[in-house]
Image 1 (tube, chains in turn orange, red):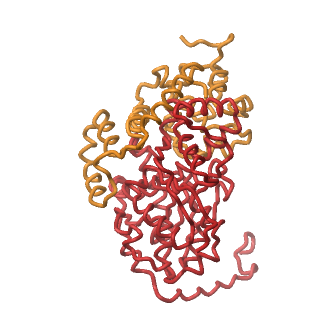
Image 2 (cartoon, chains in turn purple, cyan; image 1 turned 180 degrees about the vertical axis):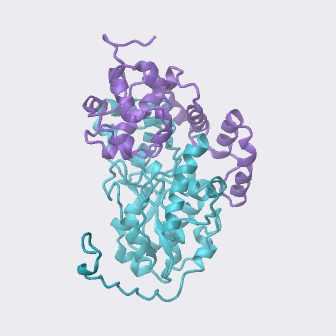
Image 3 (cartoon, chains in turn yellow, purple; image 1 turned 90 degrees about the horizontal axis):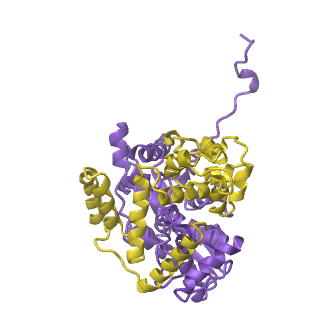
Length: 191
Length: 318
């Protein structure tokens, strides 16, 4: 069940988890965001609709919407918003909340992000071949055949590494990330 | 060469692999321009657009480790050639200062690795900004030995170099790269989608979304008869170059538009050999486009004489 109203409003949690998020209260429902969005047509709800739903504390519906996962971080909405709402940052907040609560079931995008950061935590650098293999095997094994042609061309051109590149002070990075995760857990994911 | 233009260099992961041509040509061009770059020792990934989607504080801490390393090395400015890295570095620096609570927590995390970063102590710059505004187009012009006459180029900026407002060019209609390419002797096409999105990571998540976005860019560049698209971000280059075949298959088109880095074209105009600029690594070959470069500038087009207003068919005058 969604916990709404009272002392624990969904709206307030979204605001608290986003730097500068308090501007969300100023949304005019003008729709400039949706009109500027390159992936708007693929979204369940336009950003404007989503903000109205957040204001109405419709937590379930918002976190199950595909909208944040289709945000490509182009920041058109952010620079065009007449109320200077950090819209892209709010989309990131909603992604994090959905991941934490296990919402939005067709979360390929979430798995891609998780696989990506898994590589980064393991090596300190991104590793395309490992990322593509692990992620596509899990989600679209058939696409692997199509992808392998491109992968081969990339290899021939020296554009893809076969082995991950590891940073020297990986332990230092891991200690930093571990501490950051602890701090994050203490504050319920708010940054 | 002047030694006052010293910068920390943050190549980012792409420049070690898919965008190795960008790394090679950046180094060649910086050398020619007297931009002194020193790679940050043991830098790590910036998290791209992925880490912020999962956990915010570690995402900021990941980026901040790089800022702290550069600060410890005594730098006051850092160059990022990748737009996503550029955005993450400058956003983390800005937010750590603007939101002291966040800044304090990030530094608590950094302390676990015996590091510290003072927000505001580094200026994060995109390579294009440094070339156009620190070095200047006069200097660039003075180095041009083989002008790119007759080559029609579509400058493609994408998103994160200008948005959210990075301060050095217009957020919707930037022109720095247009002017730079014109300085190199090329013909620059003014097409309407130069700051539209390349699809980012959607190529991995939703073909339909990604190929639609990539297709829009290719279509517009083709309509404006561009010989090549010029990029300043490895993600943009990869999407437009490596997925061009997929776009052709999906929409029944036959685009063969090479997608190059602005540094490669600068190097070419400076007379640096193609091999030293990473040419040949692109999936769509640049050879046919480069063959169009002529030794002489194209003849200036005669300005069309405007018809007098009276000659225009006006309603009610039949």
